[in-house]
Length: 118
Image (cartoon, rainbow, N blue to C red; front, side):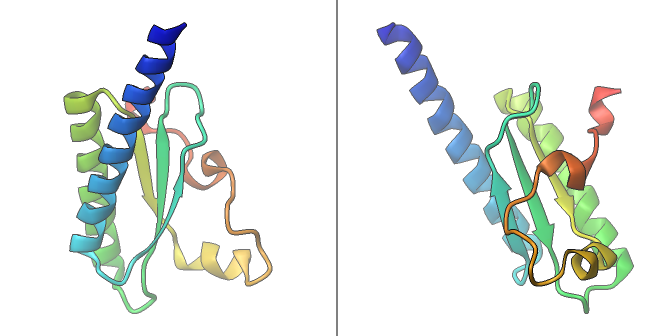
């Protein structure tokens, strides 16, 4: 029992460090980004980061950011064994969500399936 608790603590510490590093990486790429982080687990996914970028960001820059985040997600999976999925909010999704929507939504609905899982 004590070993199981220790393993969970080690896992949670590794996950916290990885998510923090990933968040810093995103903010280095886009300082004005707003991040929503969820530690809700879906299958073998460990965490989710949803990024809302300023509307003034061009579609090309938004796509470049999404691609860099996907590369980083794969790096974290290969290096640390943690599956942290990240996605960029589309402007139409922000309008549909509106001001009265809850702050935390199920990540599956927003992000879909990972291309790595096919």
